[in-house]
Image (cartoon, rainbow, N blue to C red; front, side, top):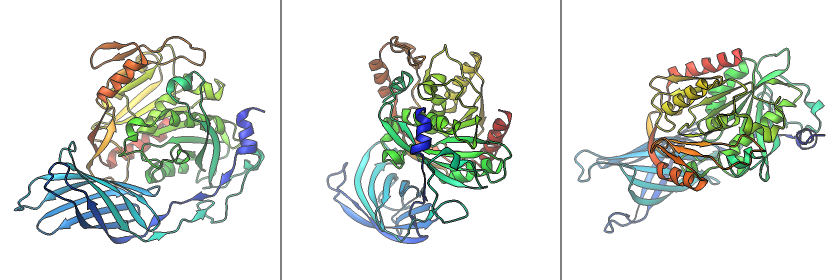
Amino acid sequence: MNTQLKILCAGLALVSATASAQIRDGGYDGRIQCGASLTNTSQGPWTQPLRLQVSGNSLLWERTEPQRFTEVGMGTFQNGQVSLDLVGSWSPGERNTGQWRTVVALKLDGKALAGSATIYAADGKQRVRDCSVLIPVEVNMPVVASSARTAEPIRTVSTPSQLAGWTVGQRERIQFMASNPRSRWALIRGQLGPEQMITGDLLMPTKNVDSKIPVVVMSHGSDGITSGMHDVWAKPLNDAGYAVFMVDSFSPRNSAKIAGTDGQLTWNTTANISDAVYALKLLSSHPLIDAKRIYHMGWSRGGNAVTGAMWPNYQLPITKSESVKWAGSIALYPGCNLRYKNPTLKLASPVLYLLGEKDDMTPSQACVEEAQLLAAEGNPITFKVYAGAYHVFDRMSQPWKTVHEGTYAKCALDVKMPTGVHDVGSWGPGFNRATNKSIETPEEYEAAGKQCEGTFWITVESHAKAREQAVKDVLAFLREH
């Protein structure tokens, strides 16, 4: 019996899908306590009140002093955490002038939101004060539910035959074994690393499907699994007759999100790539799923999981079979400034890039160039650029704002990847497109990356027209392939 089937028979369990604790709607009074100024030693520590307005997952921060200053901003509460990027302004006529930025990271701890805040100069480069935040809140306790229609516990499955039936709208959480490759090079060469239990939420179609079910595997971005993945994407896909399998690469590794943290530049995206391929392997032997119609879709960092997992040299070390492959891959605003490929390989299935014209986190032009190069080499890849759209354009209600994020947007690096497990040749070579110089060693490549990476202010905003068209484009891509 192969390893994956053993996982299905002995290790596969459908466990209770537990919703995260939710802060009750309303207004809450808290405080921010800041240390002495880091730029002016004559300015000592202070403590000030603040107000937090909660409506669903939307949190509005307000810290004001009449006729003196105002500091406001919004964030989304998910997985027990919220990050806020705030803009503060002095009132007209005040002796102080100008603006500042405050970056806040809070976590739900019992009946309070607590965490750190850092006040920066307006340009986001100079740190002014380090602070702590405490906001007492009222919390709704988590609810355990087995599906969208019943609160009874989810049954545990011990054999694949017990998964042979399904109901419309059924939702189940599946545990499956994956691993932790230390790098892309290790994964491609079959060095899969320590085993890692991963979870994925399987959302069945909301209408009857006569034959086996097509499924879209979703790889989340740096915010983890978001409400937009459910509301913007899973709903229309389920309504169109596709199952959705949302893979959670963060929670099993004790991380809720990495957006707005140093993790943007240090998180090993190979884990997201690996998790997606293990999900492909798992679902290809699932008795309900059409193994020839398993698609992969990802956003931002999840888009980079797509642009890695779409290549056969990333798949074969895990699947061990050329017949187990994606029916198609869809990457929304992936990062293309760092390019990893082997020109001797070809994509085995169609790929679609969906890009925002004004994206400054993962610039669209680099992805357009990459897609054009791949297409010129005979690969089945297409792209669409949505006019006026910024990063995360498909969010439902993201107001325009700038956020402090780690990004490789200023990089322009290529590196040749191994062809597969048996490629024992030398590393690379690589190429720095910005300096027009070759890169001969992994150490040179790492140094070049350190020189161009950085934490910058980038723009995010919803774009209703782009979002609606993107949903149509994805459904059309799935129907065609």
